[in-house]
Length: 259
View 1 (cartoon, rainbow, N blue to C red):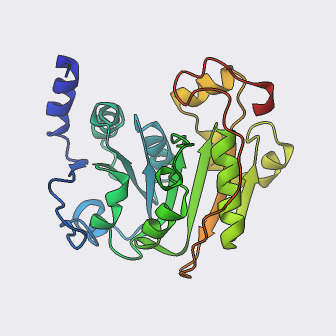
View 2 (cartoon, one colour):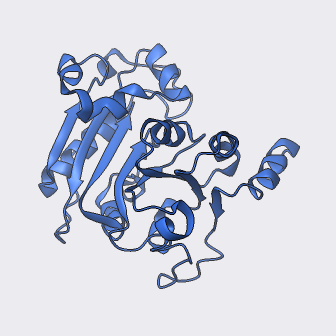
């Protein structure tokens, strides 16, 4: 590990807005951490809605959302601490009280949040995981986990550059009959999105570093938002989806079919 990463990890230990817990600390499915059910009471000190960003990376979106809406509490979640450091440091230096970061595996969310504690979930540009459905952050595997902490009919947002993940998520939402709020294959070029106003303002107003890069390379940004009901039925879509014609990381080649 580089000295720069070690320095960032050491500095993260001093940030009051960062919580870190890995698989070694959570030894069984029945274990919950001291923060589960107490984020408003112990950290935010208010009764505002809690919004998670999964796979937050550098934390740009988490911090940006928190700056736009001080009446919501935002928690960025990722396992990559060296990336998360940037957003955590920015929020710490700015004295932002409605931002926190949790460094852990997304599969372990139920250990950190109680039932109905979370109001919204943002999934921003995850790896599409084209080989294995259970690794996709919009799969029914993860819907089951999100339902353990999300309030009834809580919102889930996906922003992605991946045609594969977008198509898969559309099928998953349709197959399970989830209430669909917004669905576009071109967030910035679709005229209908401009007319929706507040309903898509958060999705359109904020762009991450990598999102800018993908737009510059000719990729359109897909956005889909839906509600997650409490009903137990979870049906994994059984469809053939054309794989993306560029790499998840690198993206050296972009086919015109992705535009």
